[in-house]
Image (cartoon, rainbow, N blue to C red; front, top):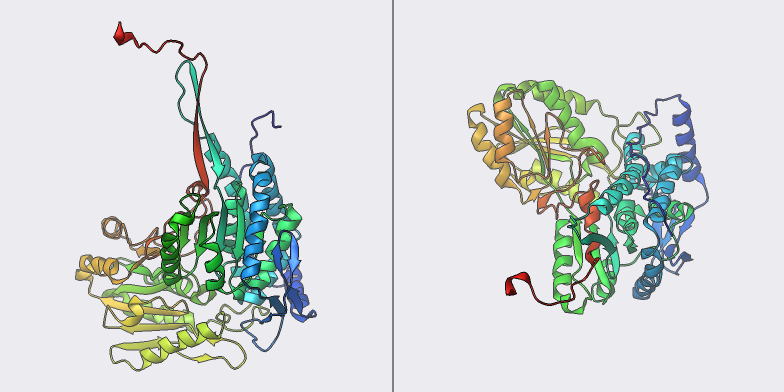
Length: 542
């Protein structure tokens, strides 16, 4: 029993290592990358109730930048494994939910320190290999952001627990924050290792149990995450990893009496389908499930005539093409006034033309491969479409090659049609479309930005005119959940820029803030009266 009110260590953002060539940190990471690349193929199991579960259905894992290389295989399951994972979670629930909060906090604080130390190179290398991230993108994501999620979420958890009601004389009012009455189903994407782990860890930290279905293209780093959870002391059954077909999992999960919540990052279409499935099964559930989702984006850079062209060009280059544009927050459309366009064009074409593209092992490469053949074919299809249109022109990039890896050149398109297909549809790849407008039409162009897309995830205004910035903030109030002034529309940091969007981009339950954790608890109000009444009569009765 706890006989003290504990104060957790103050959360501080994990410093990002620069990995300059020739440094010890660079040498060690690349050595780990090569070791994992060249080792005997690994066998990634499912993890159910702390046990490694294997099947006869083995699916290959290959680096997107070298798809002929087999890193190993992951084990593919069926409906029975989903049921086993739910049973394991529910069997673990009571003991985990009743564990004093400081012990749950300790588990994830330990995970943070393990990740900052002995697990850092391994999780970064697995992300570089399996998801084709360059060294900096892997460091920011797989190491630093996940460390931050663990540490800041512990701090947010304690803040939530401290939020208590007023108590008048003669009584004591209290709020306790119970975990959900069931299990949480976490469905995670390929593009951020940190997001995948956090979608499991955030509910678990609040006392919930989790069934986790990662993306098939993220299974290498998912295995490292499970190793990290085990090393940190996450008890058996609290977080269970399954690899099964989506509809097969959904058929079991969304009809289960004890389904308590969905923590999702992925496509808008899938999320809407899952919401509908959950809605149709409402009578089956013990409680109304919590549904939290971060989905797609068609993120914008809005530029005012007063903007500095070099700043605009750099925001475009970084915002659109880091990690091959495979970020929900990546800049995908830009609105640039004609008075600065020629200068912006010259700078951005020069920048993009200087990008080196290839394997993450060569850390001079800024661009790596897109995640898989399906993504490659989709993005290449958009590029082919652009080339056939009379109202759009590719000014840099436009080539692609999948003979060895799924490589697509960063591509910038200029269109005279503000509703051109690539201005409206999410591509999720290295394609940025530019619409050049007349400076006098700034106000009308803001309306265009707001109305063009169903998404509302991220966006930015670049301007040296404060009145223009204020107008953009007002007119684009609902167009982006994360809004950036004089910056690229991506790169949110835990504890600094809580992340999430609305409209077609999700429920805006900001990851990296206390409001996300609040979704994974159900509050109970307790009123204790110290001297109860002994007579029913109130004073007004005389």
